[in-house]
Image 1: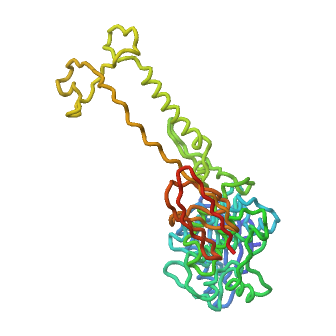
Image 2 (image 1 turned 30 degrees about the vertical axis):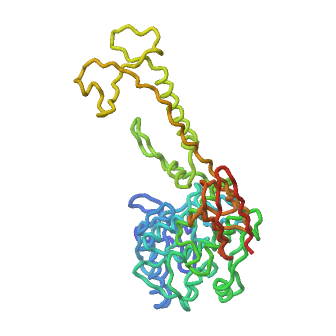
Image 3 (image 1 turned 90 degrees about the vertical axis):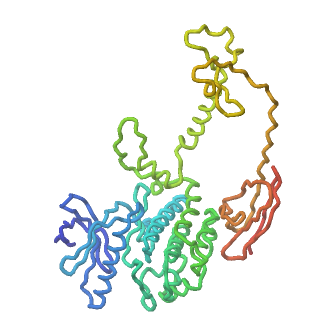
Length: 464
């Protein structure tokens, strides 16, 4: 156990250890803050030491330039003797690796929520030009609040950098993308593949690519397509099969084009089913100070919005308030007394009086008061009533039912609508529509339907 300080940081205890170094709980006396200090011991050969130091420095520079709730925060980087270190946010939670090893079985909705948060963090990193390159369960930390953090950008590729992985595959072989194995250029879609492999393991309890030796694992990454998650766990929603299959496509062009799009599909599943402690609805943060009358969005409410949830007031209260306001306005205009000069006696039957208000003249659009001078007496005469033209009867939407096996991505007129199952029906306006069902393993199914007002059509297809 190390006791001497690292830079200005007071080492308290070791909380993790690996081949390259250790992670310590430490205290920053400058601002009295608890931090995690990750070290790398350079007591290796000169060539190895240089390579490891580069990787270590790359982690600091990569993660240090990122600012996102789902990415660990880097505070400082330095070197003490032959030990380099990074001071970072201290995460009081469990890695996804620890959760899997503990035997805890997470609800499908919680798994989708965790994976969606990882995808959100990756999307932010990719937007900044940083590819993580080592997404695996050990580098995903789940806090008690349900917030998920991505750690360890140690082998991340910066926009100005380049790496060849031929003969020296850096990363975890069970989660590495095929293009990295064969030494082809990589981009953000490589992280999408790794997240798909992690998602598969959390859903089924088994990594998608296994083997008795490194070469066998890498060959499976390149050539083997794992069984759908529902074949190992029939209780899972079939939509997971679609998400995993697309994320694990061998060719990058067949995967999700971005982590953001993968997150969108995952959040459809995160809204279904119960949550446990790892899938808490919101992060408990202290609300910001407000002045009386201020309308404040707290961190918890922001987390609800981020997860796609809505409070009962937003879902039901706002529409109800609008309905009440409209009804009140209607009652007011229906029951309001006639316009009477101040001090004049009220009419005996207000409901029979004609309101004395300016009426716009048909020719100029001006009120008689404007045309004849301010304050001129005006007699309000109601124009002759003309029967209103009957309003056009709106055409009822048509219904399209889906019965697709095992699953398919639904595209309506070229635009993605959802995944079936769980999507089992959709409402469309009458007319012709092109409906395409896609499954990454089979040719797409396409048909044109002519929908009639209030009618329904059933699309049944089995991919085989």
